[in-house]
Image (spheres, rainbow, N blue to C red):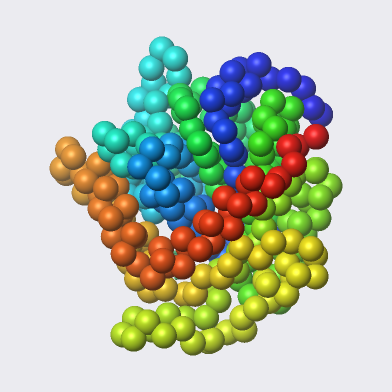
Length: 293
Ligand SMILES: Nc1ncnc2c1ncn2[C@@H]1O[C@H](COP(=O)(O)OP(=O)(O)OP(=O)(O)O)[C@@H](O)[C@H]1O
């Protein structure tokens, strides 16, 4: 399966760390965790350069979460120019199939080879430039998209690792275990596990209460010898910021304005405060992971 893809190698040689975000189950908040990871890495230093690649081809949600879904992608002689969610600062680059669809509601109905071709093109043709981190949001489960990513990246990039997202419920944890066994089978280093929708933040007083079970992710991490990166409660403020990030296409500056607004508004949420601690663990773990063999 492994072959050296020189076009991908050339493009990714200026990317220091690649973090693949996985979840066994759909709807557990993988895209929102990917978005928050990118936003927090971006905010972690005034010079941090971050990319986010959305390979959830049938359900791309990153452009909307970052407030840039009104954008089209510009094709230059040297490949696709990513969309910058932070506008002219150009430190938060985003690429998604969502930018390539003619109409927002269009669905992508592709078989494996076509998905593989799209993913390879994302890896070989996007002008990411120098990046400290590239965060990759994937579809739920472990399917064609995951295999394509690894097939093209593992032979050419040593600093590849994964984060697993789960909710605390038993069914989600069972699927997270499948994800874990996939990463072990393909020798993909794991930074750790994040438990999302763990408890509920009261919008009035900020207190966290446990509506459903909590702690299942932490328990799984301990049992499996993984780092528990932290938990994030259900946060209605987060939904307001990420889900409502629809761009006003009637304004020429709509997408750029909305992207900047998401960055600012997210920074003030309680999720952002909690995520900063998760980020510390992620960065610490990045320093420890052994390069992919
Ligand atoms: N901690 C949270 N608090 C409140 N809402 C959340 C939280 N995490 C995710 N959500 C919301 O839940 C919904 C699903 O989240 P998201 O799209 O990130 O899940 P996903 O696992 O990527 O889904 P899919 O399987 O479709 O790819 C979104 O509306 C998102 O804003």
